[in-house]
Length: 175
Image (tube, rainbow, N blue to C red; front, top):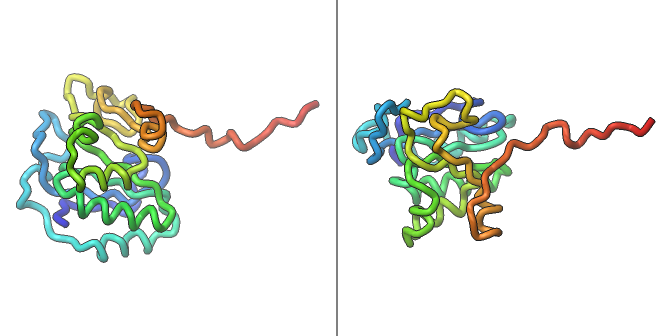
């Protein structure tokens, strides 16, 4: 798998502490992109799945794996294999893409389908500089969607991810 880099303890690429892998190569070339150094497919370096899986095993505090880029769907088979390893460890998987969910789902590509199947939340759509927002949770621009793929598959239509209430399990005693 060709990667640009990784961060072992990200808190901005999804909820909780995350291993974020930045894939190398991107066809979108969004103006104002946060990671333009990931565009060239020949850039970055080779990393094998064993090396990347070992990063997950080193940190018992991880909540999830985030696949970012670049464009993870350019290396969908390898990304799916890594995502499956993460899920086998009980981690959730977030995947960032410049494609829309509709385009990915309609592609008919088995490698894209495998990555979608191994992803819990898909952050879809290109970065749009005119819609850049620091208030857009876990996104660069507010046109991008946080799609809950399990609920989307169950309903047959896009269901957006909502941040769980961390205090929901507490009850207020009756007085």
